[in-house]
Image (cartoon, rainbow, N blue to C red; front, side):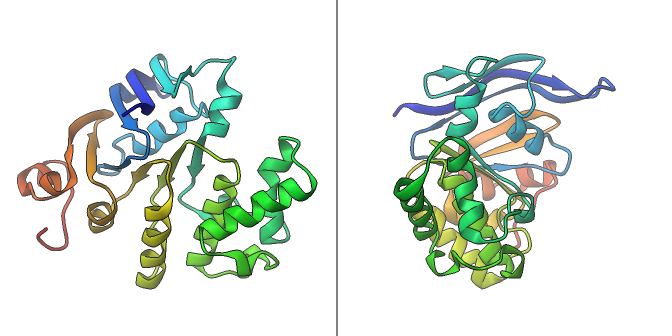
Length: 240
């Protein structure tokens, strides 16, 4: 299966010299759902911001499909990598849901019926067609989460990167989100502290700690290894 996204020996240090990424190498196959776990401060969100060029590594390689990330390709890579932030309000700022979802494609020059079709398709993909005329900040947490995802899907990415997607969701909203993500065909990197969510959604899991990938394997095996989880400040609320 072809690689949708990969990093090779990726390093990054903050301006004060503290290392945030120390030789991160991994890959995601097309259509694969991969969980990224780790304690606070492990470097997970910093890694996510490197995947579409918001941050740029001190050395190492990010590659999306056939494109290596550099100054020439960063625009196309930002279209291919759909980053869904932890707080959906960071992505919702227009007067209506449909305007939010249309914002990205419209800025690429899409207009008229084509744009409307893309907006409707993205909202349909997340089960939010009935919300298109609503004001985003009047929506529930789960509804805002789905609309934020739709704003990314409207750009037709090849990879989704989701940062703590269940944060703030009630059980029903969490279940709805799992249902949506299971239907999406693109590769997904799911950064989460919600280990049961990772267990249900992703067949493969990485653990990151101290800016490094310290484990990579089948989700059931990793989440069943209590010693490994304890070593990296992770814990299942029940036995898998």
